[in-house]
Amino acid sequence: MIEDKNPQRTPLGSLGEFGLINHLTQSFKITQNTTVKGIGDDAAIIKANDGNHIVVTTDLLVEGVHFDLSYMPLKHLGYKAVMVNLSDVYAMNAEATQITVSIAVSNRFPLEALEELYAGIETAAEIYNVDLIGGDTTSSTTGLLISVTAIGTAKPELIVKRDGAKPNDLLVVTGDLGGAYLGLQVLEREKQVYKVNPNSQPDLEQYNYIIERQLKPEARKDIVKLLADLDVKPTAMIDISDGLSSEIIHLCKQSKVGCDIYENKIPLDPQVISTSEEFNMDSTTIALNGGEDYELLMTISQSDFPKIKGNPNLTVIGYIKEYYAGMHLITRAEESIPITAQGWNSISD
Ligand code: ADP
Ligand code: MG
Image (tube, rainbow, N blue to C red; front, side, top):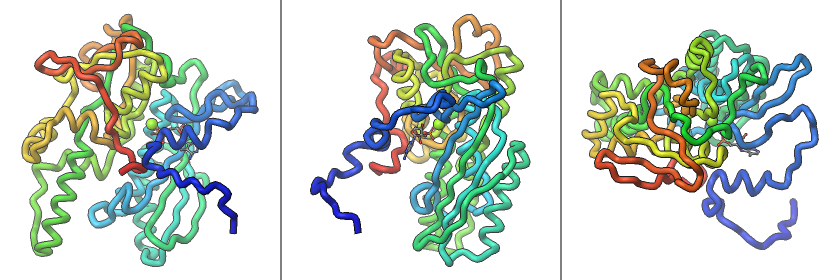
């Protein structure tokens, strides 16, 4: 047994997820000249011998924390575990090429369950054209754990990090926001109904879009291609895994800039609007703080605006300001409210 020489017991919740990562890793030094970017972006960047850059990213999903198997089919879980990682590769404006998959399983799971999980992984690998090249398999005393690592590649001049946003750049998001979080609320509600009445046959047709956003998200590979076709290289980019406000804060902090975003510009699907009304929730709050949409948030130079204007995949929601201006949401009532992070934070939750 390792003797605990430090009698202090600091609760992890007091640091938060990013405080904890920073605390644990701040003393590490980069010594390899092939390490272009270590901790702090959507993916790490490594210089390859052929002059290209390789990007690497990893995520761990834990049963009971990140997914609930009572409404998450294993096939969808396998698919989603791959998407979560590919999304971080595309956020670097890179092409995803390989994945590794590691699992820890308890004997509660029969072979057929793991076949389902891997069917989802295989579908994702086929559609997104990545090779499964390895992983690890071990046992777990509690639930299921699944960890995916994704590898990608890009020419060095095409890589987009979080730290390149400049004052006057436009803030742009892909797709629409808040759906995945609301889909989860609907699924949670149905789970409670089912507990009380197992014979209930839920009619979820009116929630089909938001439930699909939660159970079967798609990483925005198409956006990397679209940006290349439009000849637009964003000045900064990040994927929206934890909610818009938390990602805006990461991007602005790393770029040392401020921003204004406009409430009335945030793209929302009609199902997000109707379902948030039904749940008595504010749709803007959900778009800002709900997680798991896996859209991309980017900044682009004003001079590129004519190239993206009118494109249905890209919505301008605001613009970048000087650092000292801070980060604000301009509401429909034209009030300016500071943006704070209440994003998904599995450590302090
Ligand atoms: P993302 O939300 O894009 O997946 P995270 O918020 O998980 O990124 O992580 C932020 C950064 O911290 C990334 O560069 C990630 O690789 C790094 N990181 C996260 N956890 C650890 C850890 N336990 N040890 C070292 N680096 C970590
Ligand atoms: Mg990310």
